[in-house]
Each structure stands twice: as C-alpha cells, then as structure tokens.
Image 1 (cartoon, rainbow, N blue to C red):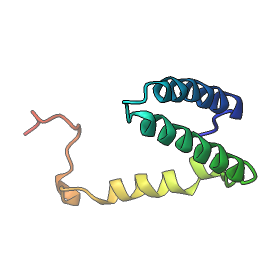
Image 2: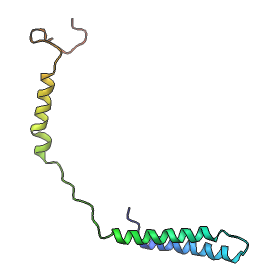
Image 3: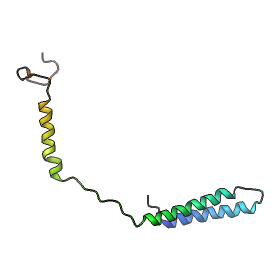
Image 4: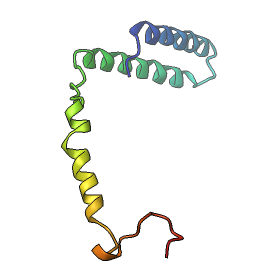
Length: 99
C-alpha cells in the first residue's frame, strides 16, 4: 500500500495537537496514547520510504497460444477418453431420459 508522505505528516500533526491538549491537563496520563500514535506514524513514514525503491515483480501474461493452444485440446481429449460407456453402448444423445 502506497500512502503519500503528506497524508502521514498531516495525521502526525493532528495527533501532535491532541498530545499538546492532553499535556495541558496534568492529571491525565492519556498522553501516552497520542505519543504512541505519533511513533506509529513515524514508523509508517520510514517504512514507506524504504519500500519506495523496491518495485513489484514483473508479471508474465498468457499468450494467445497458451490460451487457445495445446492445453485446450488436451483437456477435451481427456474428457472424450473418460466416458462411462463402452464402445458399443454409447447413447445417441446426452439426455438422462434415454434408456
């Protein structure tokens, strides 16, 4: 996931404002939550800058020959070979009502 650094910094600034507000209330120990959120945003920012240099591996797409070539013929050949009927018992149609 590629999150722009500008958005991460904006979120860090929001958490910093919350941290300043909780520090003004000296009886509250909730400043640790905001400090942890800022730390998490910093780690996210650092990890995204490290992974920005790496690129996704190239994907090998199927060719027309892969799709319409030998594979489709071999599957239909196997289906024709796998039948529940003997050579002399093959029905004239695929209807279940044929006796």
